[in-house]
Length: 487
Image 1 (spheres, rainbow, N blue to C red):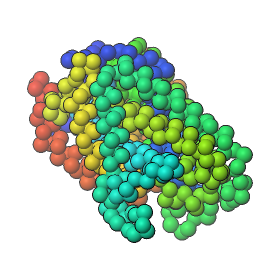
Image 2 (image 1 turned 135 degrees about the vertical axis):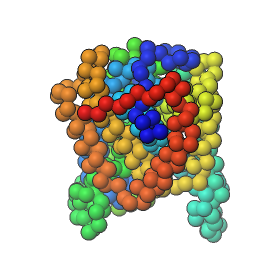
Image 3 (image 1 turned 180 degrees about the horizontal axis):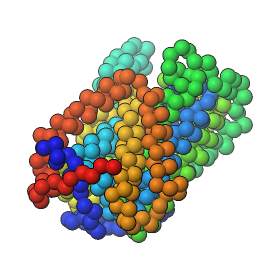
């Protein structure tokens, strides 16, 4: 059984049984990545990162996270050019270079991260929707727009416990229905949504710039409270840990391999283009946000962009921006559902999870995976709060990124002659090692409770693999496992 953990999946020109159609070009890939990234990480987590960890220096947290992501994105780009049909992104790369057990572990980490992201984004979308409708005179029952058990204030001033976050459920199922319509059609809608969202962010920045109060930047780096991660330089590190999930988009791009035209060329363009666009937007947005609203007011704010627009007293423009952001959240849900459903489909094709999840519609949409995700993530989004979800996303993503960098190193040793249309600069060791060290540095900012929650999730994943996956793996049916060759 232990030797089975190290069996390697051979790379193949195409995935048998896949009915995906190659319809995505470089611009659609960048739209997919940017649309996925510009979501809760920008419109919800930014305020919390500033108010609880980094203060006005939250832009430095985004810069540090972008630097770490750049090293990892280069590793992704090289592997994507090597394995142009690996729809499982980091999972598939690990399966080819590190072994089945590691691949399952990293696939499970991404599953948790993506699942939590869906719930997080849906919850934030519900918060923005409630704020916008209230301005239009439509007041929803607070008990159906907050996480289960949350203490809410009723219109008469009394307090009650929330039942369920109903708008979050509606948002997830709406995007699931769009996916089931096919990649070509849904990608056009997604590109339109992304364009609208980028336009709204641009309008937000331009509108807020004249209202920036330089006093809000003082002190730019608040003194540490005596507790690690609460302001000071350690606060910037903890802030980077929290916002790291905002750069998840380029992993989603890599999962689109089977749906991409000329994947060896277009996947690296999509991965690196996504990172560059997002880094510029994040740094500018976060710097303007804390210039308009004092960071102390953002510590528990799930809709900081709405707060900033209210602060500058431009009600009509504020409503336009909020509506654009609200619509733009759908692009995030679309992208995460796209990436995670492809990863689940690939794992089912490999036999590590039940084969039902590999079933697709006539137009190539993995319907079983999509519907299962919609049900599971809507349950989480309806009952869990943003604070309980945020760091879980970054932790799972960081672990996946570390494995991708390690896979680059091992594959350069094991397959030195393999075709690499994109080869990262800096020699065989520099960039992957910098990626590993950067991710480890960000991981050091994680709090104990996040590690404990994720430890429980990993234990559950290990149980599934040893009780089901290791015996039903397609490689197990082909004979003895291929041995792992260490350095």
